[in-house]
Image (cartoon, rainbow, N blue to C red; front, side, top):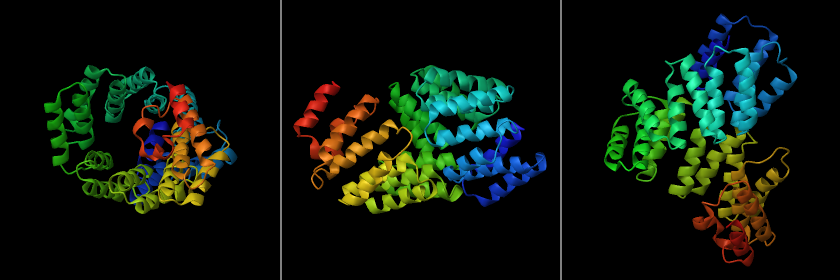
Amino acid sequence: MLNVVGRFADALAAGGNEQLETEGWAEAEKRLPLDIELIAVLSARRALTKHRNESAFAMLRDKIEPRQYPSLYWLTMGDLLMLQHRYQEAASAFRVLSQYDPSSALPHARLGQAMMGMRAYPAAIESFSQAILKDSEKLAHRVGRALAYEAAGRHQECFEDLNECIRQQPHSARLLLIRSRVRRAVGDSEAAEADYLEAIRHEPQTFEDWVSRGLARAMENPQAAVEDLHQALALRPNSTIVFQNLAYLHSEHLHDYSKAIDYLNRILEQAPNDELARSGRAVLLARQGKVQRALDDVKFFEMAQSPLLPSTYYQIACVHALLAGHHPPSLTQAIHYLKQSFQKGYGTDLFKEDPDLDGIRDNPLFQELILWSQ
């Protein structure tokens, strides 16, 4: 069953492509004995791919007995936790999944992704290696391991995986750009530039390639990068990744904060609890001097029931630093959240040159925090 569900999930991953969704449902109906519980869990997956996380959670909690379809239940639960950046809980779900489907590569690949989120790179390498052993033909497993090797600084092994992937897909912008990045990291600038130019030269054929080429062009030609991301959006109209990157391009490269906020709003319409979108919007609102609206987004996090991402604490600190001149209580709040961010291992490599913090940089409390962090 899990292999059928995996193909069904891949079809739904089109994120709004109605034709692929229809084909995915048709395959599920043809290959699986549908009953009420199975329809419920497939509906939860459909809600998940449309970024309706709350609906997906409600279906899993209220309508599905895990013992009835354990593979599908734990796959869906793990994927949902991954979307919420709850990587440790997602890893636990994927480990349970592997017990129910020991012959499938999918649980190991998903576990590798969770380990990457946790920055547990040796464990990610092991998980992707297990996935490759069980399904050597699926390129994504080898790409995942290459990225884990890169993150672990094991460049030679990374090159071996990348070269095999590029042998199979020689014009993939994503793969060429990854190899370009790794070559640059080891000091081979000439080969890195050759890979970069080759990646830019070919018109992308996949969603991942459009996104990769778009981000690669951000510094030199941000408007061309936006055009590439819109091509990706045509393939997956509800993609959070594309909306997030379009917001980044418009805010950090084109300095159009209103347009950037529009894209973040589209994410929050689909997933109101998305931390990256809401914290990013709060920062942009604060840059615009929209004090109350920025504070409303911050208040949303203060009322959250679950732990926040380390990056969210840093973003909240930036919001308060930007508002400190208009809203005096924000000064101490900025220091408070910045300290929490540092304690959680985030931001110590960012704060020295982050212009969002300039409003509090000369304050004695900020100086004390810097001495404490050292």
